Image (cartoon, rainbow, N blue to C red; front, side, top):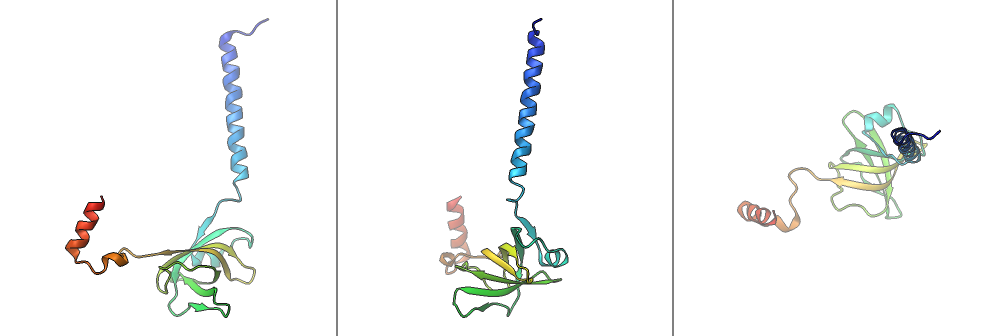
Length: 150
């Protein structure tokens, strides 16, 4: 007995749907460890992530906490959010906008000793940021340059 064309299409549609759902589940399972969760200091202190889990820590660099280690490449500083403080260590090239009192997002892992080990630093600037090239310009000149680039 042959299957009608209408039933054949329904069977093929059901198989395609099952394959599509399976592929989605497989992709989600494969990427489960690739997600990088974002924490602020009070969250990371209250519920620290597993030491091997990649996370992002965001907050303000505490005034007076920035110091360079003896090797000249490693820095240590404290990220705070007003409620909690997290010590951070980073070895590498420091972004030019990275200064005390500014915002920072550190990508890395929480060490077993409670120090966040950063692999990458992303410095944030405030809304009053002015590029070096525009600092000498008057307001009218700067507005004209911005208008020309649009």
